Image 1: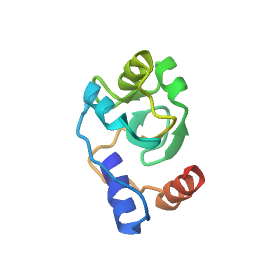
Image 2 (image 1 turned 180 degrees about the vertical axis):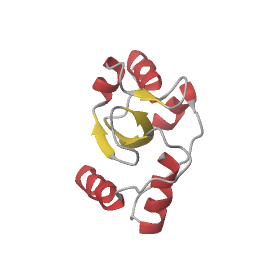
Image 3 (image 1 turned 120 degrees about the horizontal axis):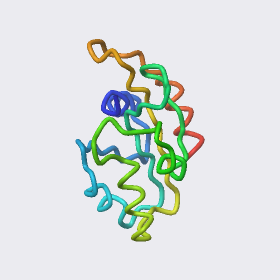
Image 4 (image 1 turned 180 degrees about the horizontal axis):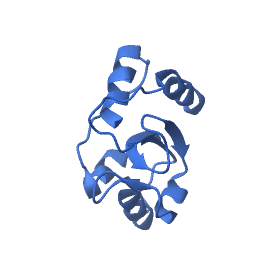
Length: 123
């Protein structure tokens, strides 16, 4: 899901935006926080969202909620909790959760305009 969103952002050619694809980075995610002031993480989540639905999540809420789990084992929530413990979180950090849904056999319709609007608000 996150990679579909990144492809859409690449096509939109948003200026001054670095896009990085990470496949199950786990604790390795923390090295991408170094020297960065603003980060928007995009990840597939199971949070009662429809497949392809995008929701801005508070990083603190992510780590405190059992219903917001990553589609990976050691995912974004765990990496953020570790970064918080190590005091290495960026000054501004947001998480865009994309509903993973149950039907993995079809490509979901992502609301790309919603993602672009969200990004414009945050930048």
